[in-house]
Length: 262
Ligand SMILES: [Zn+2]
Image (cartoon, rainbow, N blue to C red; front, side, top):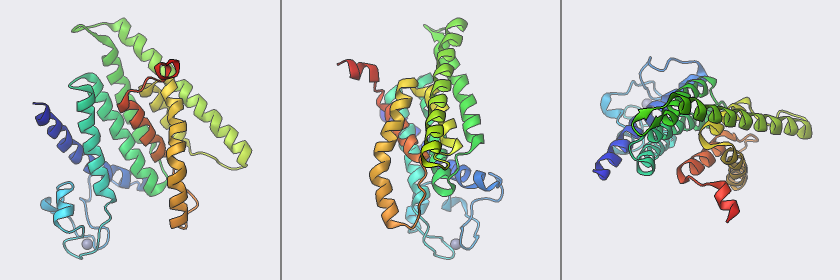
């Protein structure tokens, strides 16, 4: 049964990942998420249903547009696969529980964040707002369910702590930005990274949120050096590194206090 559920979660992840590509690509450009349907960026050929199957269509059609034969970047397939893997991990780590839904929601927010930040250097407010509200509702339910009953006091108490963690994490990131602006005499960090930290505080707790900033910096350093050498860009978005760090900490369920006391 576990294999069956794992595959289900993976397939759902692929389908949702395909939609998140559309959200991450279109929302920053102010385009509709529904119309027009998916099309080739080169020849505008509207994709048929058999060209829209996540991952498989891309691989079966030889990584190119069926009509104009222009190569299509594996970027979108990568994020479909990543979403599939994250959804499957949500089930494998947390089973069938409210925590699984929280993991799926957090993964979704972070996948869209990575896509839009890499493509446009933008972390969409709408994604953080809608995702944040969904997370708050899920956390409320998560804290309230005790032994098959719902305890309203526990629900409010638990959520209160989560909101406090979110606010402190936001405040810390905002302070780092102010310090960075002062030292470098220019905008050191995007507003999206600071708002993202509120989502981290909610879901990871305050300590792991702080650790995520350090972990993201460690991951970013070698990769940034390689990208800067390969491309003629001077700007590398930090959001994707923060997202990767947060996902590692969330799914590994590392307890920093426990680690430090050993
Ligand atoms: Zn084409």
